[in-house]
Length: 429
Image 1 (tube, one colour):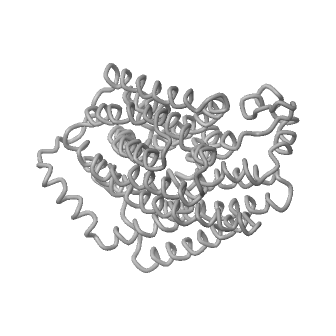
Image 2 (cartoon, rainbow, N blue to C red):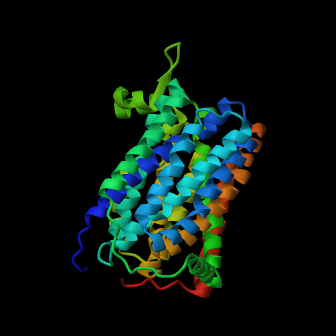
């Protein structure tokens, strides 16, 4: 293997901003089902909000990635912060269903502007010697922020949700200052086309039938189950599992100091795990992502991706079993999902950016987010609603078994697609 090219300063600045944004984003989102339940809203209403939020979060990048290629990543980053900050603060003042839905739509818009900009930066400053490691580091930073956010916000929301929202807004303010003073636009080929020309390019990419079908398969059979996991797990742990037992399970492993930030103690002195503090994969991925990336870079993209999906299937079945067996099995389910995510998610995102010319990295990452948006939009209105249905039946674990079967069907369909139409060719630089 060739000697790796070192990462420039802007690579680390971009990843620092990503940590803060994921802290704020997941800090709010992971506990949002608990938040809406506390306000008296149903699972179906929650599913609608989740779908709207995820749809905007992941469809807007189609356009923001395109604009970033033309006008620069730094300018679009600042625009995203200006949209983010007041939207988060509005959550403090609005409690009606329509108000919450519109506010989360606004946050989704801001997040959507932001999303392709850091991954596009990583693509612009990496080459074939460091691309897999670079995206592995990027994904580790994503998950560092995503793991710390729910833990901190979980403790804050136990006091008052307003404290959580103020903290998220503060993170956005820090991101703005870092970007203004330290982010330097990465070098890449200057784009001279008009906005209309850029929109035409989007259509040209999506009019490639092979690529469009690939995006649909990813949306329906990777991103839909992926987002269903994050939509439902905090509610599942908080509402269906024995959180006192989970506290005792962890007590002998991590000690009371760590447990104090993962749990709350009620007036009777009983300690329980807070659902959102363990219901994510970030803490696992932050530790192991670079190691997994070093292994996965030795293998081709699609087989690696499908292997990750198969591991996720096993995770879903163990999550379901936690409701009828020992509650501690939920940790094995989360671990397996995390391993599958580490193997599959950064690899497929890297794959898509590396079938794109460097000067069109933002454009291709934007079209990739269409698949994420499709899966996210369907996940709330289908699986969150199914969660409520199975919960009313007294068999909430069925939702995880259904997800496992869904994912297996996806593996077969994607494998058949590749066998029939072949893989895309990754570029050398």
